[in-house]
Structures are given as structure tokens and as C-alpha cells.
Length: 195
Image (cartoon, rainbow, N blue to C red; front, side, top):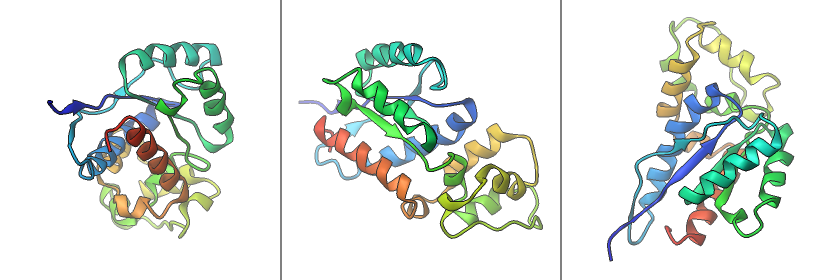
């Protein structure tokens, strides 16, 4: 029997979330693959065609399509929108285990703050004054902290993409919402017998 192929799709609230999350998800799944007894192939997450801020019926339609072709569909929302992921799952009772919630507390930008060294590397200048709280999910306005750390530069696609590629997974594992997401991803992969 040949190796299996894991296919993953992602729906996010917006494009800036994708820039960070796509490389991060790929890195996390690659790390999880090291635990797979039989191994599996994975070529990267695919991004869906709509954002999760679209009307609920549009999101449900997109998830319906994605579940036909992908093993796992990740649905991203910020914490105050968590109920939207649960509402989508309710529409797919037989496939709910294949829908993985990716829900940072407050905003995705908080996860970008988890590794101060990666943030310093992404910053255009080394002399910007900024402070990251020890618990990044308690930052009142993670977007403002990130903007300050990056020197107010407006190249979010490059900056967020670089952070998605470089933020230390060990640093992210200290973030409760990140641990919750990876635990849910692991359970989905185990149920589908990839792990």
C-alpha cells in the first residue's frame, strides 16, 4: 500500500490572515508528519474562495464544496466570532470532525507576537521601541503592537508571510489558543488515520 496524501483547505476572515497562516499551517503539519508511523504526503494548504466574514450561507456552500475534495477544512475566525465555526459544523454533523476551528484569542496578529526574535528579524529597523506582553493573547490591541514593532510599514503581505515562515513553533506552543488549534488538528488527523 502506498503512502497517503493529506489535503487541507483553509478559509480565513481576510487576506492578511492567509499571508501568516498558510506558511504557519504548512510548518505545523510538516512537524506533525514526523509523528506519523506510516508517513504521508502533504504539499501545502489550499485557500478557499470566500472569506469567513461572508454571509453564513455562502461560507456553508464553500465548506460543502471543500469537503468534497479535501480531508480537512480549517475555518478561521477571531475569538469573538467563535460561534460562527460552531454554526458551520452544525450543518455537517457527519463531517464535523473534518472541520477544524482555527480561532486565536482576539486576533491572528497576537500569534505573530509570540516570538520576539522573529519579530525583530521582520522589523525594518532594529531601533523601534516596542514591547510584547508575556501572554500575547492578553494584548489589548495586537494589531497596534505589531504595527509599532514593524515600524509602521505597510507591506503586510511580506511581513506577515515572513512571520508565518519564521515564528518559532515552540514559542507558539506557549499560546493557549494555538495549543487548542494544534490539539484539534491532531485529533482530526488521528481520526482520519494520518497520525
